[in-house]
Length: 408
Image (tube, rainbow, N blue to C red):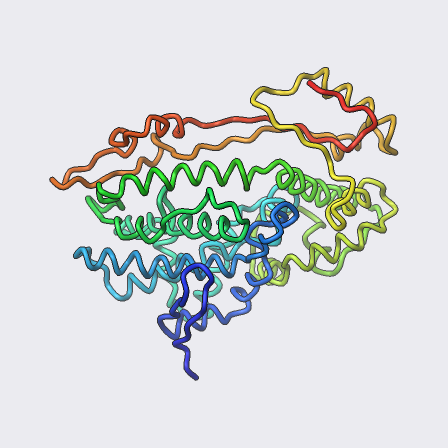
């Protein structure tokens, strides 16, 4: 069987699968499941084109890793064939631990991060493939002596971010998020065992950081997308509460296991159950739950399935006053068949925190012509780069449509 396949990608054109091992990993059911996991969750309800999957993203990130390694080799950075294969496998599997609507699951019924689940999948695949993923796992965990290989996977200018920003921008149609990934990768270099950018790539880095900020506040934190993700989180929390209280609620066999208790450890049995779940399972249950006798569960499930009676959501720079929240609570209790104990499912608030550039935690370094390193923010002539390194906090308040809107 010819395993040296090429895949036609709408972003990069042809993507090569470089060897038999990587082909076999891609063919494994654990990885094929990513075809059924949306990259942007419920964002398609705001941006209709955003139906691409984590399968697309993983292959795109692997392609960029291939390109980056070739660039570094051309610049005489020592990378062996074994290290190259391991880096490709590590980036290919970096998101394999995402479940359906991953963040909603993580915050409601699973007390394990998707990074930990990714590592569990990688360890099991390493067993299946007789230890051939050991080096990839070491690089993924940041334990390999060539730190720049890990930084290609996870840093402030890594191939993961370069792909998802460009891909999400393309599929959502938000052109402000477009980044020149080819140019940035051409500018990659290594100095003192760390990933750096050639000084002449400074303007590409500036554009990348500004694009990242725009994508977060315009797309990832879009108020309707944010509201819908919180609604799904509330739905899953409600089902878990009903299960714990012995109330009747529809669950298939796999969901029974998930909802019996919050999962904190992933053994092989839990991993196999988790590997069977994808977006279609969530949608199937949501459709069933629209018929639930429980008002909260049916009302919220209907909101997502039919995009109807959407919650209102306000976002502002200052916290919402207790008076505003209490007045909204009074109106909701008068107009909806819910008790005070269930009010949190319909009325909730919180805060958003994001920094486009973490200057003090993981500063981007530029490599000058005299072979010295310069911190990016100090070299940039963009006055707003310093501002972009400051965390931005905003506050949100979400509530169902009511007859009288109460403003802050």
